[in-house]
Length: 199
Image (tube, rainbow, N blue to C red):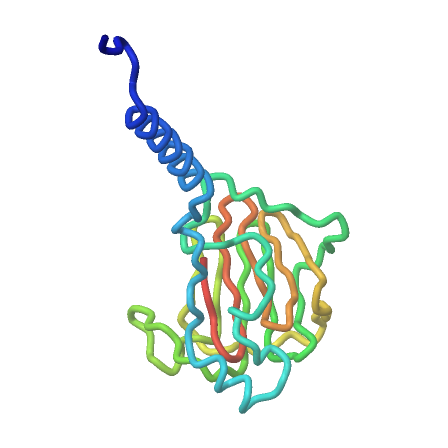
């Protein structure tokens, strides 16, 4: 007499295989890395610069500690945490003296006096006037036209690892150059003798 309503041995095997495939698909989807988390490459030949220069701020921004920005586009909610020990310093120089920044409530401008990277083009600006000045605000970050102005003589020195916040702008002094960002939008920049990046 024939069996009724049973799957049979092959039917049971197929159901088990289907269940395992569904579980594997769920695991892959949950653990799949976000494709937007790749870090942008710095401008310029940072390795060659670091070897030839041997000075502070010679490391590329790629080697510097990146506290909150992981990709080209900031997230809708950047969730940038301001350290409790953040200073309230509106103008500072890095220990090397080659880079200094001035911070207003809604933007920061950083100046690098000597660099070896190839700066990006800026519309209506001579090639020898680009790469020295960089600005970040909630709207974005990038180079400004103009050569390096004279560094003010009364700037505070921000030691590597120290952080300062003025209004919406948070800046950290690192051996790979200053990292300044808008707390509200996540846009930021990092500049160093061997290269720059914006995010």
